[in-house]
Image 1 (cartoon, rainbow, N blue to C red):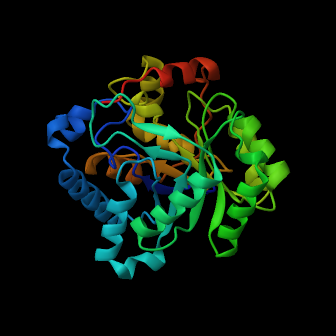
Image 2 (tube, rainbow, N blue to C red):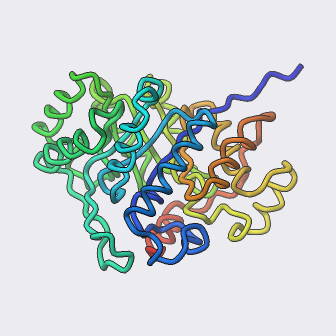
Length: 313
C-alpha cells in the first residue's frame, strides 16, 4: 500500500474579510457591492465563516492589526464561544496598521512601521481586541529594508512578549523572502520560532529557506497559496487548469493540495471569503497521493510587480 502523502494543517486567515477592500480578485462576486460591506455585515460573515472553519476541523486562525477589524471580529466570536479557545491556535501580526477608515475607495489602506512604539501600541490593541494574547505574534511583512531584525530595543521587547508564553516570529513578502528567512533563522533563531510566507506554484522561491527554518524547529505557515485569486478556474492559465483537471481537482483545490504536500509546511492558510471557498479548500485538498511540484514558477520580481499592481476592491 502506498504511504499517505504529508498533508499540512489547513488554517483560516481573515485578510480578505476583516476589511471592506482587499487585493483578491472577484470581490464583488464574493461579497456583494462595497455598499453591502458594512462593519456589521462583515462581522456576521466572519462569524459564519469561523463557525464553518470550526465544523471542518480547522484549528489555526490568522489575523493582523492591518486586517481592518479582523481581530475584533475574531475576538467577539471567541467571546461567544469561550469553550473553543483552548482547542485553537491564534496567530496575529503587528507592524502594519489599517488606515482605510472602512472606505473601500480609500487612497491608502494600510501603513507599515516596524518600530518599538508601534509594537507597544499594537500589542495592547491586539490584547484588547482578542480578549487575551494570541499564541503566535509575528512582525508583519519583514523585508530586507526593514529595521526590525537589527533593532536591539525592539528585539528585547519581543523577547519579553515571548517570555509570557507567546511564540514570536516573522511574516515575509516580496521577491527576497528567502534572504529574510535565512537571516532571521541564523541571527535570531533563539528568539523567533514561527514564519509565515507567501508560497504558491507561481512563487515558490522561498521554499528552500522555509525548509531550512522547518529543520531548525520553526513552525512554517504558508499564505497566498491562491496568488490573490490568480490560481482559480476563472483566472489561471490553461496549463494550470489542465494540470488541475488531470488531478480531478479545481484550480484552487489543486493549488491547496500542492501547498499542503510540501514536507516542510506545517500550516497552509485559506483566505476564503465565502463558505464554499472554505469548504473546497478544506475537503478536496486533504486527501490523495503526493503531487509532483509543477513547473509554473515565474520570476519572483515579475510576480511581485504584478501583485503590487493589483487594485484594492
